[in-house]
Image 1: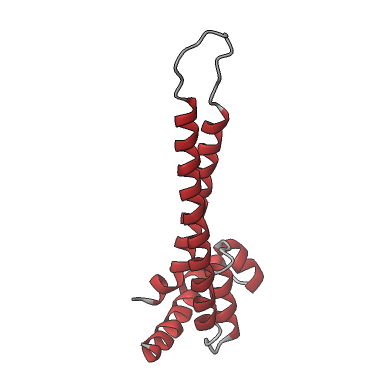
Image 2 (image 1 turned 90 degrees about the horizontal axis):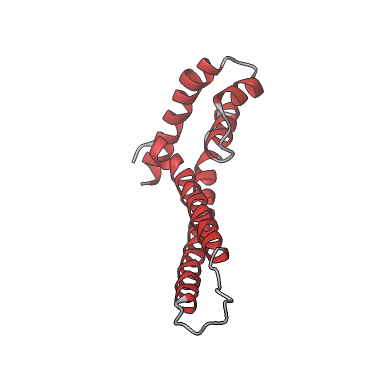
Length: 139
């Protein structure tokens, strides 16, 4: 696994969590849109079945979300532990800003008082080499 792949693991999990949030929100909207016919005429209805189905789906998605959050927190701590082993404080800060806080290159460059191209190419490249060395010794 490359340094970049290792560092991106936390972000991938947060993206999955956001997708689950959207799925849950859509299910809640479906749940809210179930209508009841108050015409007074007796007839069969599958509202209870549909409600139960939506509740089951929502429960499953919420459980997945809890599990993913736990996994994301573990991965976050693992990534931070490796980032903190980088000797150069500027590289360390760049890695933290990019892979933990998900900051843009423009914002990182502004904080470093450098060009975003320099941060994205030179500094990031050096930081990834440092992480590769750390990962190589810990494997």
